Image 1 (cartoon, rainbow, N blue to C red):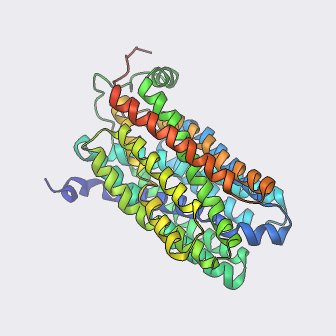
Image 2: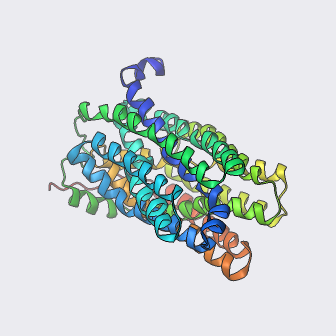
Length: 410
């Protein structure tokens, strides 16, 4: 049966989910554009700004399992709409900031809360529930790919307005874009009306939240995936936060950072679709490890050489292809191991590790820059940890393929 025919009954849900995800991730990935003018204008340091981004990532990570558990109790629509409202408030508070406190609360806490309710873990759980198992990985790749288009829109708009009218106007445009998240979340919330499939023998859906957590951390494949996920967050948030600053230090055209973030967003689409398709056919966890290894090689190549416009755009294309492809792989692996009911919560548990890495990538990168006056130490640490995590993930996935948990009745 053609894929479109299979998906037609749930297309409004999938379109709403994709739009919510693309705005949630695209706006967040483009905040680094405003770091230099914002910090100079209101008199805070680079590490102060990256502290706000680090708090955002910690709030997102530690609240993600809670958002997933609350979605089981109150429904996805309530959680996603509330998250969209928090995003708008966070961007508005940052756009009107005159000191560190508003930046930390707006770009840090409020956007972090919103991401826990609107970003990949929730969006992938909605998409996974909306489609049959036979096309799930492919659809997760398509939704993740559609969710990657936000940077193509937000980064150029933000940079153009930032250059022409100032960073406050640029952030105000992000507030306008974020308003569209509310109707998108409302349509995605139609998933609440679709009943869960009957639990299979390996499904933990009949267990309580606490029992599901215990089963997840008792599964060796999940634990290794969660630990390797740390380096994913560290590398990606280091780039989104510090690449615009790095290019400015190197004397490159300010528009190049926006073009590179847009390039990342464009190739995100291709990578997400490819890895969604590949995850339907090959070992998802081994593919994850491969992504981490090739990302690390790309980081080492780019930062070891003086940047040029051509090398920067090529680097953006490579990293974009390897960026959000982790989304359908992680979501698909969690659904296979643990079923759909607690997927958002368990995926959130893994995401906590990702966000601890994000904290290190954002704030640690800022501290190392302030301490040494360059990003050399930061990218070297990122490459070393990325290679180690990727190699361990691939080796474990091939030596010990994932097994379903041993079920206990709660």
